[in-house]
Image (cartoon, rainbow, N blue to C red; front, side, top):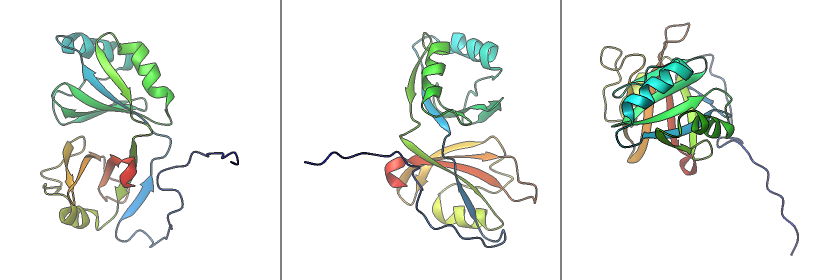
Length: 180
């Protein structure tokens, strides 16, 4: 049997990329983003909150919100559970985070488990309204808000970032990698 060599690749690699001069929806693959699930250990949420604030400069959100500092962010996805991200953190992010807060939280690497798209564009809200059963209007879903929901019957999380330079909304949309 011949030896097989496997080459890692981004979840959305090989997809056709077209430009529409900024109309509609623009999707950008967030390849290289480090992701980790962080779940507070029983009775440790206050100690974890203090540790994350001291070491990373982030106040852990107490609900469905996202807070970021210095390329690291924590998005509240459930009671005392967060999806942590780090720009260009890759698989090393979870190990580093585990060293920092592992005594107070279970930290699980999700960098290869999720595919993340950054979505923006003039028609993004119209498109999301067809995809998710939540109100994504700017009055209801503000920058920093997080939702764990379904997208066409598939479990998904999304959070809103600050609007782009042209005023278009910006969302990030992690889904399980197998659904990419």
